[in-house]
Length: 598
Image (tube, rainbow, N blue to C red; front, side, top):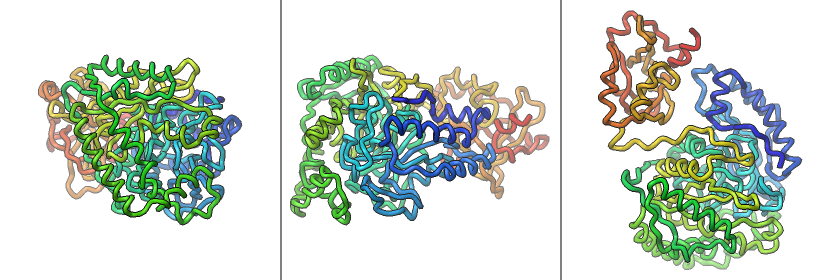
């Protein structure tokens, strides 16, 4: 398929930027050539690509930023589905002509741009985000990266292929019925469907506005989770926005719900069934308890998305555009929604709530669900011959998730003898996104520690476990940073890196005198207004915290720091006497940047 062997993992690129091996300009030039080359293999991935001049201008803007002020996505390339707005760019929703040129940039994209990312283009989709197949577009049908005869999955087809073909590091899709998960499976990548509302949909053209969410494709759970944490946040301009109040799953033996064997449906795909059995066995090998359950109420819920008045919500968004040149299948689905009335809509709501109660009662027996991402995969020709039935089959294990207000994460599972990929999805209650990331990363590595169309090995850092009552978060600023001389004092105590961030703006950093190895001192300075100091947040077992603190020499100690987002965390501070003979190095923004200049 002409897929490049570039590893565009976020951490891989960040390390290359830090070492000076690449620049945003050199990467953009490389990717422009790769995108041109891939268009000869599959010309249907993109709907709109910014000009080379505009992309190189963006790269130049980033290169003008000093290293200590680079955002967490500095120079990272990404794509977006063409139902997400960017100011000055056309938004087509998969129609032959742009419905409009966006005047503002969607909230979620703006967050990523502010973090330093480079938007490489707007990707193809099933028209008006209606479909799980990826063939309902006047711009062509993006193909599976493993076999050109097979669908790539939809509706976020181009977004998934752009990642799997190593053209971008991550991409944004949308997911109402499974569009952020089905294409992930078909193309051997991770598909993160967050809890509804935690990523703003302001500036996103709706499918079912009450159910829509922005989804994330990436080569690893770590990368997808990192993007989610940057992109999320309450948005008062989005009436369906809500704060991401993450909850932990039980810290004891995890119970995984698996549909009863006789209720599993693969539509004759015996190899897919074998791979799912393998995934269940792999889950059990992680020490997770599997619990078989009655899937019938979940499947009945899934059928409501297109088989009841819920489909009329799609008509609410598309009604002004029914005179456009619609794909015949799109017109059939959305146009048929006009037969429902208000009473039907209320009845559909009542039915969902009734099924929600049934599903909740069943779910008391387990913590999260493990299902196939989708039962099988179809050829493009077969879908075109039976577009409604085959599309419906692909949503067997995805359509219920948003109707029941759940979070989901699809990860690669293995390959069938015909060379097509298979995947599984972990589904949990709303706001378990972070917990699912830990488990999904663990399962991905146990099942198939590789990703993308070139099946490259996973290089991303493992997603660290969540902080619980048995662990404590500790902020480090100097010699304990990753790769620094005293980092072993953390790792030998079972500490794991959670994230890199900055302090609030009223902190100064000092190089202490006569310390071995060299160490900095961090001091809060009321009235000072800076950019904050780079810190790492580590999760450490509470039982090891005391022995760690005992190693800290004066004038350093552990106190409470405030991070740039206002969070309080335990971390290194310096006694006032210690900075009297120290050198103020605040201008460097962090200890690593200061050391690099020595």
